[in-house]
Length: 273
Image 1: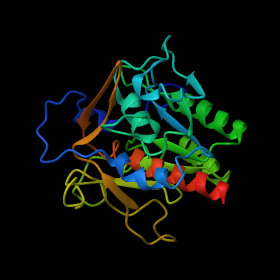
Image 2: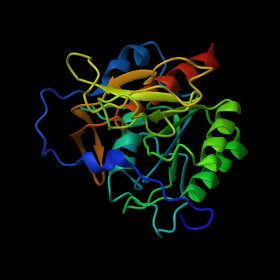
Image 3: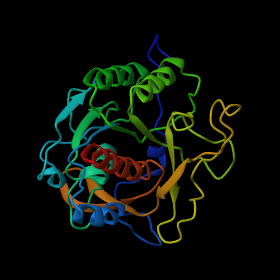
Image 4: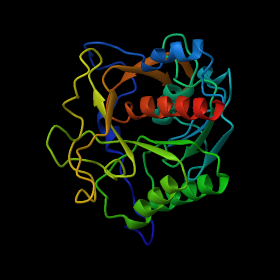
């Protein structure tokens, strides 16, 4: 810890590769399941979704149909570009446009917040700045946090997440890749107020072995198990930096944006009704 800034870890990064070097039993493009909603006229146009991650480069082929409304860099890095690839993968899975690996809500207003450097470094203070900005905007429906760590005792971070939820934002977060043991939940997906997303196998739908599980924080008054929901977390296809191609990845951090994308469609439909 350095003063008020607490270094946060993204343990999903340790186990995710953004080149197709791992063999998968099956590949899946989760966003394709939203095509019936698009055919019914719902593609997220009435909702706003924010992604806190490693950023997204300008002019990415998956966002030629609709560029993100804003890209903000909260880090000490002097670029908003995403050379690491995690932010690009997540943003594209939520609202990118691709025949092979479409996002769930391609018409949604996308807000890209860079809170991790391309070396995967972040601090609580950067997250707090981004959270406060979301609160100031007042129009964000869904916030995806494909991040996780063991720092459940980071009170400033946890309190701010709860404040964002209380303002009406649906916060969706990866539950962690430390399964199958019980008691391996990552923060902030372990919070009662947050939708904690686990990963499932592409074909069977069974919970992935790597997906964390356990009782949430404050389990005494919220006696339930987490994850709250699961989504495809193995062999998931999405975008990569500087290319229109779709590459596979795995982990709960690539499961989270599926739930964020569905939540964005629901928010848009509710506002249209």
